[in-house]
Image (cartoon, rainbow, N blue to C red; front, top):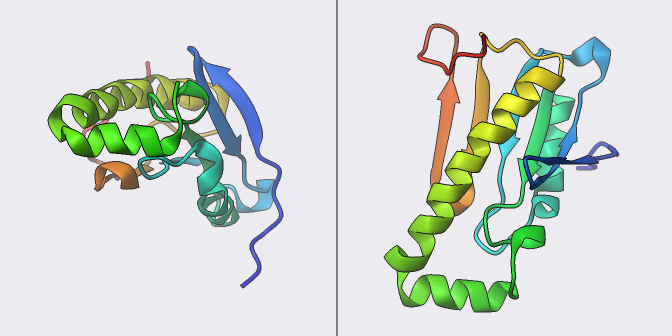
Length: 144
């Protein structure tokens, strides 16, 4: 299956390097989807997922989790070695800071893209083995 050829755009949001792709205007759902890479991956490793989300009408965004990619200070093998040598000491801070960063990125994206903050948005964090889906009527962060 050939993936759509999309140009990802980079932007730094509160010091957090991001990439995003907007859907074609004729296919735009006015909804936001965030997809983060697995542990040791970078925002560029989820290019295919961002392309697929965009093709389905989402404005799709990703960023490097804390201590990975452009925000890292070591190679992926060293990071994974540290994380798996003492999971709670090393993984939980990465997960916690990246979760806080996601709030900044999602707030920024909601303000800068043609998305409705009161409709659903999706976020997937495969490196943390979690995902979340908010739908209309669920509890959402205030964007007023």
